[in-house]
Image (cartoon, rainbow, N blue to C red; front, side):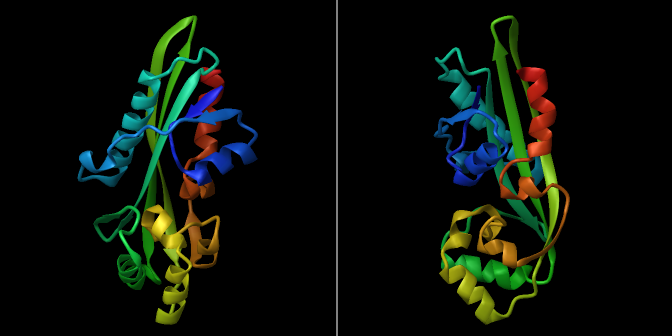
Length: 191
């Protein structure tokens, strides 16, 4: 069984929809204490910290792998996590509208089995996102919904944010919170 080291309801839904048996244990990692100038490396460090923190507390022998994930949006050289408030979300959307950004999700899988030692693998998956050229009124309406305040980059593709994203280049599920194709490749090796 897989143990997801994440509080993200979107990641849980992805695993449920893909029929991947799992449980959830939130890591409690202080994300503000982890820094790196390269977004792709940063998300891997964050994912690894989450997976290691949960793995260190692991007591259930039915758990064979722990998955940590973290996502950020890189836009014009800046890293966007969750907006601090509605004003920050509006300002970001005014900059992002009509432009491309890179959504990076770090994945770290720590696998254990009685027959083998602990093994881990970490990887970042990047998806290019083209944001709709929204009017100020459309931005205000989207931010007023509250959805952008809960998500890295200030949008949720699986929610109302699906209407404000014009195009994706790369993995769809990665933008929601984890790359199911990557997980498919990893899990057979660690079952």
